[in-house]
Length: 258
Image 1 (cartoon, rainbow, N blue to C red):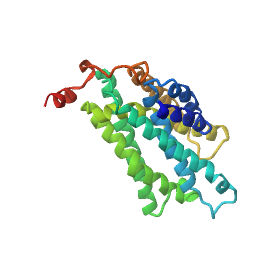
Image 2 (image 1 turned 90 degrees about the horizontal axis):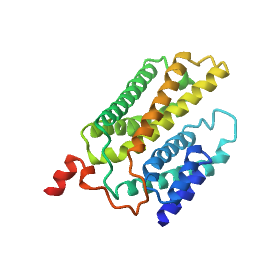
Image 3 (image 1 turned 180 degrees about the vertical axis):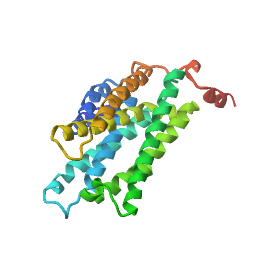
Image 4 (image 1 turned 135 degrees about the horizontal axis):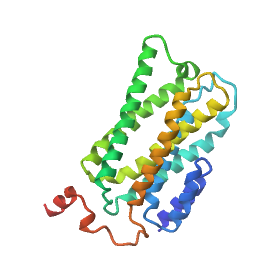
């Protein structure tokens, strides 16, 4: 229960940077089981986002005082990591429910598709840098460019593809990770959509109406699929009895019987 309270207050504080996390605080404080899968994605997103904010700055190139906010950003990264660790530990306490076949295959396709899309898009941008014709993003901030590529190729893309494959095969770890990864991808898509809207509204020359037309509906679709996935998670507090055999996958049943 102490872990839940710490995670609850941490989620409320983390909501300063990510509004959705403020909603998660009361769920942790009430010790509801759905709090863990719902909190995992925004917590990882905080680590991912604020790591790029800290490590991707062109401190010597542009004027500003962003370095004065380092304690805030470092606190958000540490808080996100702590909440993510707590959420993952709570998810491992009981067997995760298996989504319906249609939802499971849909989410598996989304994870593998998003991972493949990022891999191809970033590989193309890196190819342009090697060819001597870097994209605008590289010219404006090479440090941020390589920081994002490092995080995505070193963490995000492998996790997305591995979870997609594991979810298709009903692997227990992938099933546990699916809810958190779904909320993470939804947060990521929402941030890209928000950026596209702002760029379009300001008349930014690099704004692309096609991107806006694609990413906004994609974000809505991801949010709806994530909601369906979370709805399949058992309600009640962590004091509820663990899932019965009927909720276990064939893999888990076979392991238990061996």
